[in-house]
Amino acid sequence: MTPIGSKDERIGLADAGALAAAIGRKSHAGKSVTLNAAMQLATVWACIRLTAQAVSALPLGTFRREADGGRTAVDDHALAEVLEVSPNADQTSLEFWEATVAWLISTGNSYAEKVEFGKRLSSLQPLASTHCRPVRLPSGELVYRVTDRGKSEDMPRSKVFHIKGFGFGGDLGLSAIANGAETFGAAMATDEAAGKIFGNGLSVSGILSSEQVLKADQRRDLKNAMLAYAGSTNAGKLMILEAGLKYQQMTLNPEDAQMLETRRFHIEEMCRWFGMPPIIIGHAAQGQTMWGSGVEQILLTWLALGINPICRRIEARIVKDLVPAGEKRRLYCEFNREGLLQMDSAAKATFLSQMTQNGLMDRNEGRAKLNLPRREGADALTAQTNLAPLDQLGATGGDASAARNALAAWLGLSGN
Image (cartoon, rainbow, N blue to C red; front, side, top):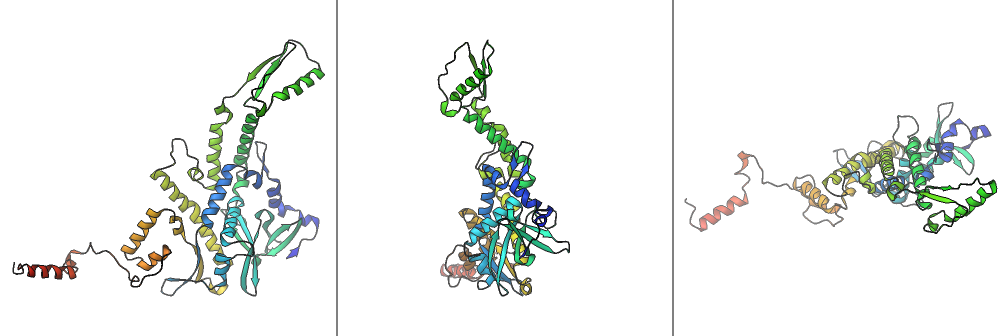
């Protein structure tokens, strides 16, 4: 890696993204929206966590395309060992992909340093997306600028595994948190306001009146005395007033204090930024229940439009950046989407039944998806024969016709 020289090069326009990630973007609500601040919102936490866990839990396999159009699972390739078993010395494959997807969803980009032994990939070391960004040098060369303990260094593109999120092309994916700063800032301000209301015992303000004009020191002493009645821990205390002072309390009912409608809107708005149906994170829209076939269709939509594009994005980048040049046409990695059916026994039983009964999968292939051992004689493709062309009805009788004729002969009905 090549260190950056002058101070201007270390802190310049090229590092604006890194500075913005650290300082955040100021919203009109007065809140600086950073990744850490946004993660304190339950909706943001749930959207990122559930998406990352759903993708990382899918089995990842390495395959080789065969000349006949089929494919063969590859277990002894160096790439399979890194991606499926041990990406690095510290993480399991699930932990690595979980972190990768979390960075991808939150910042729009995910980075990892490629460590090679000779020409063989030996590990992937994750890089924080807030401390790494692609930079185009004046020569047009693409490098990755990594900030570590106050120092910036450039890494060649051949050493970085970069997964880009949604964008309009270019070298960077777009960050949902950065572009949605107004939405997240407003939600942060609403939560803070609600917290302060509850902290004050649901008393947002009150009026303390007197027929006399108070001096400056009297006002100060009176303000300090009133602090003894502020806060939820002091709710219910008996207030003692003298010298003709009168207190008129202004209260909010609990529903108004929670700002239910505003907070409900913010939840749904934040979910839009992450492409997450609110029902997935446990938030039912107005008039919607948490159960039923409608919810099932929402889940399928999320899998098709939310999870699958992320998987395809990762799979394509693996082929482009990690598969050796001479094997890109044949070697590839793929997430097993059927892993999403593991918890739905009825859906999985229906799927396997249809695949085996229609000749698309033999019994042993179906047993393998249930982690059951192979059985002898279960390698043949089978299909139901209850439906057949009319001109083949007699030909399909086979053993059944012979059995019927034998029974008729035994009963003495063969001549009829």
